Image (cartoon, rainbow, N blue to C red):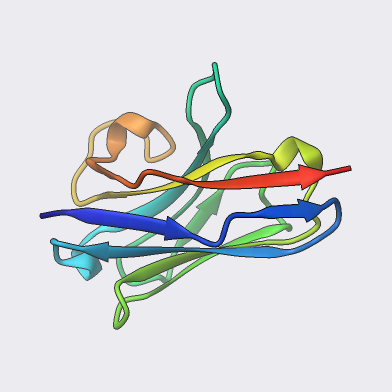
Length: 125
């Protein structure tokens, strides 16, 4: 059974840092590209960052560049999202996702087959 379980979300003040984790099970983790998306109620999922199978290549949304870092530990079947200088606009549910093969663009939610339930990040001003 495939599972992606996110953790680490909480209420923080603007300017704070936070690290999210996503533990994977039920599939061969190091065969999969992983990503983080975020979603607020009433809006579509928005791409945050992605990392390739080995962890050597990453790609970020413009708002995440310079503030967020995606990484992975294949020995622990875990992908991370380090977030710095958080802003109230970063408040959202953060979801991790995985894919082995895809068509189209890796920044689209449709490229990803597996999804977690999300962890809530709330940034107060």
